[in-house]
Length: 241
Image 1 (cartoon, one colour):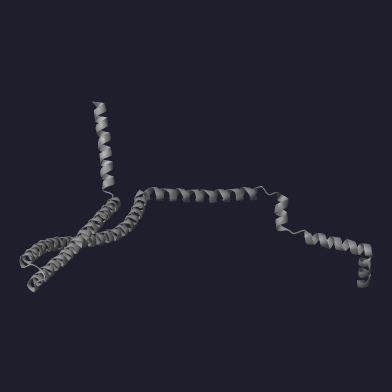
Image 2: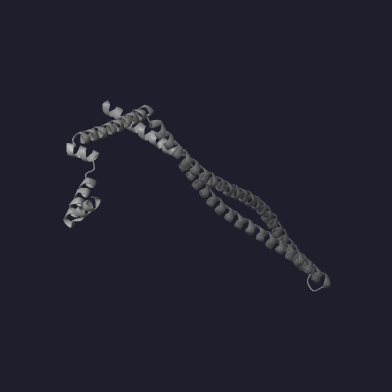
């Protein structure tokens, strides 16, 4: 029983997946356009065939009309020859009658071909309308498909942005910022503590040197010694006395 349940769930999942694919608006529109193009090809083929039959019927009508007129003229010429004595009257009547029979047969074919031509011409007009409608529908749905693809892109982009925004946890973001602030404060305090330690580790000489600059005093002492060596101090003292 468990196996059957699992198979049923798998079949159901595949069926749902197939339905989802079938409901893809872009794929459905593309398939619809392909179907319409196939219908267009069939309609164009049928149109060409019916046009050919219409042309043939029109040609037959003209051909039989010409034959009917020819038989009519032959009957008239035969009767004139018989009247003129160039042909036996009985023979003339027989031949003229045969010509008129052929004329009637040709006239019958003219009416038949005329009816067929009218029927085919109506079919041509209907097929041309169908072809025009299919072409218009294809053009319309191709434009709709371009618009639909653009709308899908915008919808997907909007969906992704909204999904990302929805997944942002404002409370966790604030908590993270508070932790970062605490770390910065701790770093600043630690830097200040290291500064205090550095100041406390200075020797007394460093503190004295920081207060009194002995460089100038040493320079004056060296100057006096140099003057003594040069005997400049004694001269100065004797002059003052």
